[in-house]
Length: 112
Length: 109
Image 1 (cartoon, rainbow over the protein chains, first blue to last red):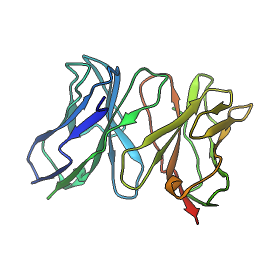
Image 2: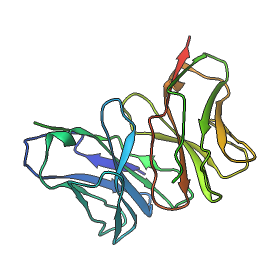
Image 3: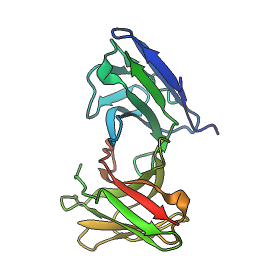
Image 4: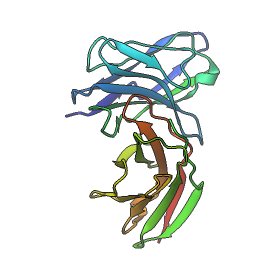
């Protein structure tokens, strides 16, 4: 198993551009989540999903959209990038609610 | 989800047990206690979780007080590779998982 795969690993965007951060898992996990981590801070939940077709907002959802059309994929879309969205983004998945999350290696995003 | 309180930093001598405390005084009866750690800028790594009984795995032990208002993560023989930020999280057996700022553990040679 590859685990949780995030692409790209690094990205630089200009203010106002849009892009999609990709996340895929091959462990048949039902639960998937997106977090952001700003320098020196803990992780903050952006959006999460408990299964294909089901998504919900987390702590800091503004400026981001998600969809979950398959169990394997959970892309995160930045609609109009802002410098405040400069951060490291982590995707995570877990089998059910009674398991720990497996995290990807992160996408380092800079918005200039 | 209940909030947690952890000391911002701790030191531990290499080879000794590292005991990381966490207060979660507002925990509800069906919320689990989870521990994760993050080494440098890598993705967080799951360590252990429990409901009310003490738990042990190959990485660590989790001791939860009888009233469930606090817990302690124990790394029995700390190594330099255990230097990381450790997060204590309480969560319903559901969807949302909130991280705080954690405890920065430094293992000293």
